Length: 343
Image 1: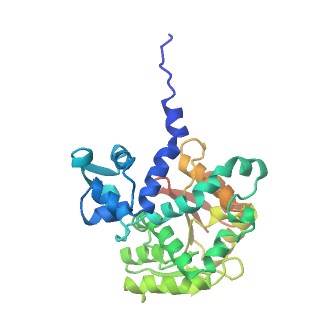
Image 2: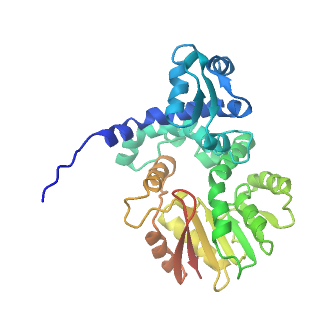
Image 3: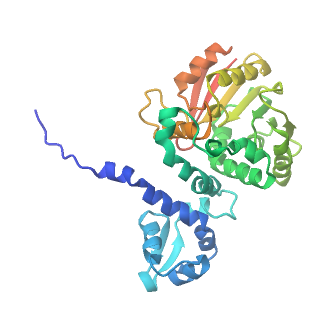
């Protein structure tokens, strides 16, 4: 029996013109609009003065943010008073520890123009970031500048905080005592684990320039007796021994051979029955649902020579090759999951 199905182009137009909404939000974040509005509700004219905006398109800009759900509004145009939506206030106020806008600032200031060259990246297989014009690779540039490194680590910590909190609450730590977070950045994963599990002791392992920032973060949280900050290069140095080895958004930066190397090194540092936990935007095995994970893999094309994101099935294959007996998966926040390999 045939049914008449109405086919329309709305999805095509929504995604195809999606950069309109994206750039509107990113611009508002870059100008710290939501941080100002977290302190007080404002009229359009007050916002105009605060941000140095022109009269033209002022209300189009603000009311687009209302229509997209990022702002609330009482009144209309000249009589309007604007305020943050609840999620905007929690996650896009720079003065709150829950701020995730750092990664979005980087998206606006760095990634947005690089994605213009996605077609070239797809045809050449080469990165399309600063390296393309003779600049330093992203990590090399970051580690050479403490201020930029601090901003980057805070951005990464902010965007991953929901995943780290979910991991700390969902993973069964009862049979483990120690954890080492490889590429631990600001120490936020370790902090969440020890705050939720008093018997755990953690080591956050990253390059030497990261250590002062991580020590400062852990000290500010009063967790210095439970989280050890250790410096090293995860390709050159042995991993610290631990019952659990974690990697948050590390493996997707690298190609197949480097992924194998890191997973082997983790296996060597684990006892029998120990766990490797990898927190990433894990692509669904059928590769048709987690669009964010798939686009993150495209972003690895833009940013890295060989990096790519992967599915739980891909991870299982690598785990069996590198010394692990079985794998499992725990959904975390949004499109992210923890894939677990048991030695």
